[in-house]
Figure 1: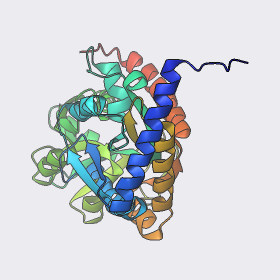
Figure 2: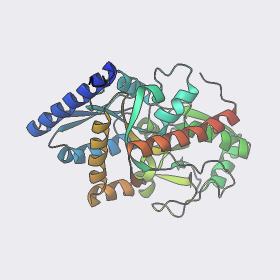
Figure 3: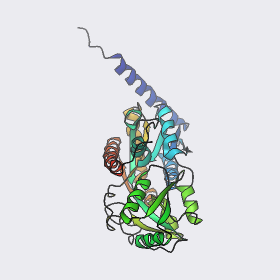
Length: 328
């Protein structure tokens, strides 16, 4: 009796996955594997710091492999995302990203150069976080109401820094200005690090970025976080109200952090990496460092990260449409 023949594409995929797993096993045994973690923002910002904490801890979980953080700043993570698309689906290149590059850029750019649904596959998630509104030390403001009053005293006009153009922080600035009827311009930077430098130098009076970006300087009193996104106050700064408390609704859905692989990366490889990351997050030292930065740490499998990304994308599709923003 003739045995049924599997489709050629299925056989090729199975052979490729088997070869890849054998190759990774040899690399781990020899300690010669190199994992590249792409970061779309410059050194010194919150995302870069998070990537380096995880990279250092992953070395042991990956059998002594070399784990390199590669910064590819520019265009709000667009360059790093394009680099991931061009990478081989062999499990050796991942993109560590928050919501902006994956969920927002494809909605605000006509030609982002990548399609997350087609070009990427979720590898593992590790946290959610909230964005925050902070004022520079050179302003007298101690609250949102103080900042609004201060702007009105400056002729009703002001600038607020954001880590990237057409980002969640920029949309927040637009809605903030509309609510308080003041003329605020969102000033985009190439990441949070240069924005923070200008805030600390009192070159710009306020900024919107993630809590991990602001937390250390907030604690040091060099700037002041006056409002946070999310449905509840944050444990790392319990005295700071949410935007919802201040009457600015719609910012309760919190963004995520995750790692993404090129499309076509075998599921066995994704599951192996996801399990390694789960073990890293279970280490008290890693968990505590990330929590102290303002992250809500929690492991997400590839499927769970995919679900989180799709839900967040849908939420922001509605908000972006509300603002009348036209893709550039």
